[in-house]
Length: 295
Image (cartoon, rainbow, N blue to C red; front, side):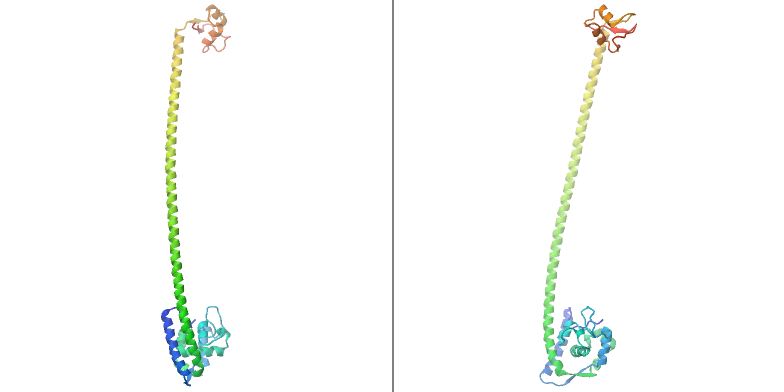
């Protein structure tokens, strides 16, 4: 669909539109000071063909895309040519009337695609007529409106650009701050992880040293205990070797032998001295060799 508008966001197009409007203003000014000549307008059939191309011939169309009516006015262009309310709410005759004013000012270039498609030329505009004295005041008013609107659009564009630049700067600063914070947090996490690893290694080394020391102490104690046991056993063997021994005969008992050999401490001492060989004090065997305790 054609974009039919007096205003564009492009500075170049704005200048072109302004130039076209100024040309129209010159014509309007001439009419205002006394010209009564008639400006020529296109026929209704021409406008019907243009509307068919622009909106499928639907004069009350409003699709919500910012373009209205049969020849797809923008609201600003409609108001600039003296239209009231919304274009699609106006009658077909009113829309054609305002379109004739726009065409008188900008030519068929106001509808660049469809006019080219339909082959519209100035000859099509010359097919009908409209009173220039009616169009002139509207053109003058529209020119002033367009100029004000153009200045407002430029100021709004500059304001929007400044706001966007400020927003971009703020976003960049936020990103930089967030990135710095993230980097700092990452560095702190790495340092904490490294410290934890070093502490774990130190704890492990300390535990290994403690275990080794404990094991060495245990081994030393075991060796000392074994040496003491061996020494005691050797001493005991030496005592046994030096001790006097007797051989049990038939009818002997620990009590009888203790009395016979006058063992100090009696049979109890004799039993204690021979615990390794005698498990029951009441039972000894013929031929069994017993040690007499040393006095």
